[in-house]
Structures are given as structure tokens and as C-alpha cells.
Length: 127
Image (cartoon, rainbow, N blue to C red; front, side):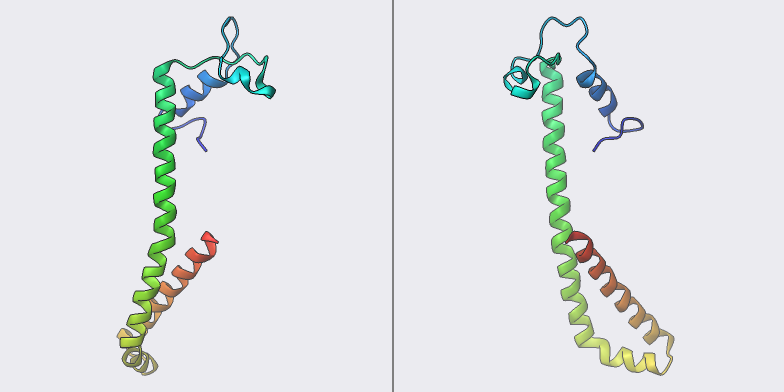
């Protein structure tokens, strides 16, 4: 996905260059002419520097998506482990204070609940 306008790191000019009709172009892409459903379609062949830029952009985008997916898969599990340990170690003390309407106990319980909901929402969104 790349927006056609706005600050998108020069994607719009690249899109215009690759999707505009090859009017007046006598040479079509040799590699793409071997694809059956593109045979006979007037497509401009990209210059080497533009082709390299597109390849580099695709590679950086793929690495970005891989890292983001990995972080969104691993970090919520680590948060759940830490939250479980904190609940096991400190919940008895803070829940008692919460039931006594102590502000510190109430805050601890609310934050623990929000963290648990946050982990659940990330797992729900990633499934």
C-alpha cells in the first residue's frame, strides 16, 4: 500500500512513471512480454536506477513487515509473562489494599487489568 498523494517518499512519481501508458514508446518491457496476460500491453521498461530503487524499497518494506510481525508476536507474550509474575508475587498485597479502597491498591489493580486487556487485544488483532 502506498498513498498516491502526500509525503510518501516519492512513491507517487514512481507510480505515475510505471503506470502511465507507453504512448510513443517503441520499446516495451522484454521480461514482461513473456507473461501471457501482459503480452501486447504497452508497458514501459524502467531504467536501471529506478528498477534498483524499487527493488531496494521492496526489500526494506519486507524487512520492516517481518520485524513488525515478530515484535507484535513476541512482545505481548513477554508482557504476559511479566504480568503473570507480578500478579503471582504482588497481587495478594495489592488486591487487599484495593478492597480497603487504598488509592495505591486501586491503581495497581487497574493498571494490571489494563495491561492484561492490552495483551489480549494485540493477540486478538494478530490472529
